[in-house]
Every structure is written in C-alpha cells, then in structure tokens.
Length: 147
Ligand code: FES
Ligand code: FES
Image 1 (cartoon, protein in one colour):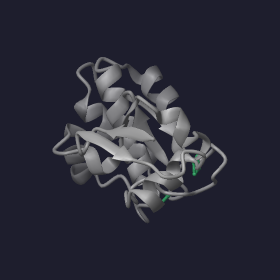
Image 2 (tube, rainbow, N blue to C red):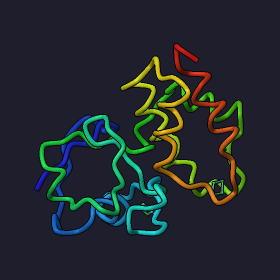
Image 3 (spheres, rainbow, N blue to C red):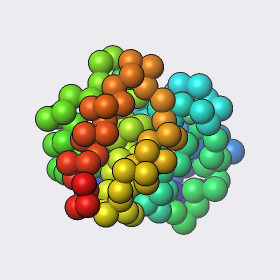
Image 4 (cartoon, rainbow, N blue to C red):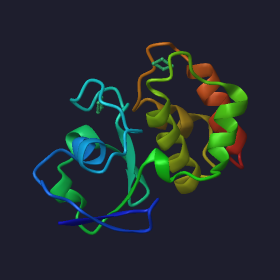
C-alpha cells in the first residue's frame, strides 16, 4: 500500500496497512514527531494533517490513509506557526507541542480569519498537561489575519 506524505513529496510503501497510522508513521517510516499519549483519541499528541485537516493518528487506520496527503510535523518547513512557537515558547515539557503545532497549522490554513471562538473550539481538541494554553493562544493569534 502507498500513502502520500507531503514532506517528502512522494509516495511511501507501507507494509502493514492494518496498523494505526500513528504507529505506521513512527515505526515503519521513522517519523517520530507525532507522539503516543492516551492512544484513544483524547489528548491530541498524535495529531497529523490528513488532506489538511487535523486528525488524531492513534484512531485512524493506515489503510484509511490511502490516496490522502499526510502531513507530519517533519513536513513543516518554515511555516509561520513554527516561528510563532519559537517566539512565544508555548510549552514546558514539550510532549504536546507537535500535536498543537499541527492543529494550529491546520487552523491557520483552513481558517486564516478565525476569531476567538473558532480558535477556542479548535484548541479544545488537544491537551497540555503543563497548561501552556495562554502561550499557545498567543502563538496562533499571531499568525491569523483576523486576530
Ligand atoms: S495519543 Fe492520540 S489522541 Fe492521545
Ligand atoms: S508542554 Fe508539557 S504537556 Fe504541553
């Protein structure tokens, strides 16, 4: 089976399409940016973009990724949200960071004019145990047109 990864720009061969996407990315493709956390869809540490939308890769089968564009944090090259995260330092331990970065990147691409309520709704998908929410909010607002 082949899945398309935007960061490499071409298709990659997958041996076990029945695996969860999170573990295919990490164990078969060596893309360890998406993190295992709760592994039941609650925490968002495993978030990647599927055709541009944030998806929790611990609850998606790899076979469901056929024909879709998967963007992992390794594929973000000079995205504005990366610079914003460097400037706001919205993390302490950093375990949640790649997941939040992917959500924020997806939000900035899909809703570049998002207002406060849309931002709040989107950020509810992920959990930061170190409670860096205020700084994450500042980082995403700094890259949105309407904020
Ligand atoms: S590890 Fe996927 S949502 Fe927590
Ligand atoms: S920075 Fe530690 S969980 Fe978010």
